Amino acid sequence: MSAKILVALSTFAQYGQEPLDLLKKSGLSYTINPVSRRLSAEDILKFAQDCSGIVAGVEPYTSEVLSRLPQLKCISRCGVGIDNIDQSKAKSLGIKVLNTPDPVIVPVAELTIGMMLDLLRHITWHTVSLRKSQWQKKGGRNLRGQTVGIIGLGRIGKKVAEFLNHFGANVIATDLNPDQLWAQENHVAIVSIEEILTNADIVTLHLSTNQNAPFFLGEKEIRRMKAGAILLNLSRGELIDEQALFDALKEERLGGVGIDVFPQEPYLGKLTSLDNVIMTPHVATLTRESRLQMETQAVQNLLQSLSKE
Image 1: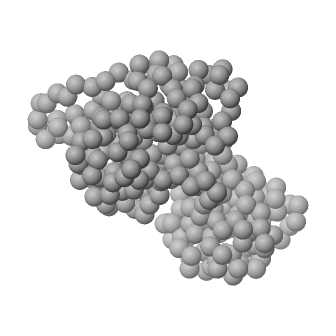
Image 2: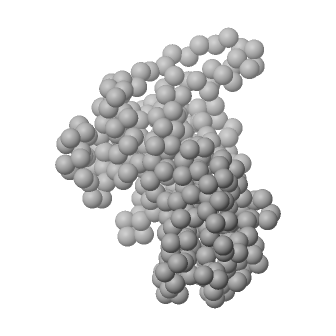
């Protein structure tokens, strides 16, 4: 093979040498992100101009970008989401798009449970109070016995449900194509979105973007939610109306929100001013173990694809 590879990730091989060793052993020419930040469209065109393959993150592979990379045969995404890649254009150009869905399941599910516990027990709120030298106590709630509504029962949503079963939570869920057998075996009631919004003490979103059946939590939907309910979003930033969410939190109609994803990142918006919000900077998949697995699989996927060209 005489292919050239761009590793677009800004933190490649930070948690282990295995993916880098794979590249070295391949004998191919490769370039690792030279600017140590998320690449822009202009950066991609500059660094990947003569590349056959890219180990990709969340940088933009628009129709225009793909059209201007004539040698490109494969984009191997380190992670699950491929919304940043124009898949129709890639298909028309014969560019394979691969991803690494399995390593992210447990990390995202664990952070989801962690955020639930934080908001139920006001862990961050108490920490901030103590750092201000204020000895204040706010009564929390058990996770056991809470009704948790999961919107989106893919691999991550299912894992969240399995974890919740161990805590003794009452799990309800909705999905476009629910796995009824799995739901029955795991004591998960399949209900409508309306029932989740009305009845759940905690609502957690685990959806991918679906152009055929778009989901959006707007003002009307947020007003349907149970008073004092907790909302979590660790899937896509564009799923929630930020102004409606801010208003509900400001008026304390919602008990708290946990967010890991935002419509625009880095996020510096108004939700940062509220003390009933906990947020992380898009790190749900970022554990040492999962990152190493994702990078290794992304490189393996790319090398395997290019070897068939």
